[in-house]
Image 1 (spheres, rainbow, N blue to C red):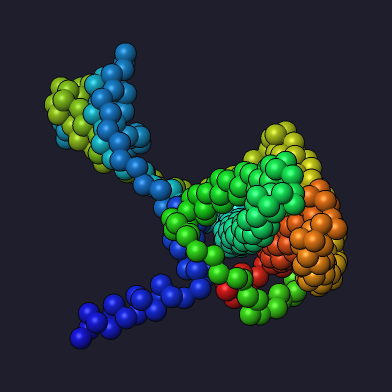
Image 2: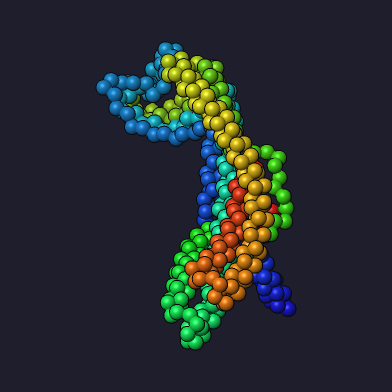
Length: 422
């Protein structure tokens, strides 16, 4: 029973809108996964900065030879005298082995806090860029699918024209056989039919290229096209395409602050311990072993000309990023305004194109009648066929242009096309 339900669900899914299936498949393809991996990489880079707040521990070992006796650790005179009196080995030798560990951690480094903020903004920018790329790919997908519909409508128009020409050709054959028309008239109609067939082959090739493009984006081979329907309007709350750049602008501000904060003293905690061994001390030639360590709280104030240069460099980068954001904002605002106007004009264009198709159909009907009674020449009749074909092509293009324009506008405002169309 469970398998039957799953099978039914699968069949229902197959009957769903092909466009919805394409949008769903797009999000699972490598083209989307690449951006997901970039987000993961940025998370790790952010973690790498946070890791600098933790202690850094190192283990070490060494074998050292000196040209004169050297202490395993510092020995005050009172301790040295006591060792000599008790005939215990002095911690001095020419060959010394050391093993130990060292550790350091930041107590306060302002620059690290600035770098953390920078990485937060960069991560935010990467996530926004990933989302924007999904919308862009959806736009490409919708545009390709709309072009597929354009090709299908154009093919239908060509088939209708071919069928009309075929009917006229068959009627003309009867006239030629009865001597009421010259045989050359058949050649003219046949030549027009050949031109239509050639265009149909071109359309088939272009359609195959579009289907391959869609398959490259989604992994799905589209066979049948279903008309696109808009189910929701575009939300124009913000220019979403600008958000990744604005997040990078904030990251650049944090970079400049980090460069300035390098002049703030750093407070570091450092510790070191080593076990030191020697086989022959300098006096009694006995083995000696001493442990030695220290803990230090350090204040470091870096003073370097390069720090001043870094500040100027980051300031220049910040000005550049601000200019880029301002430039992109102006471009996107102008583009959005132009797209909205084009959509408005395209709606009128669709209405006019539909009306033109109806009128050309009526004119062709009259032309066929006039051609049948000999009141029109073959050339005049074929011009009416071409006019109807051209009107149908204009309508198909206007319908496809609507979705291409809508897709571009949706990307600018950060709308998920899966919510808008089906």
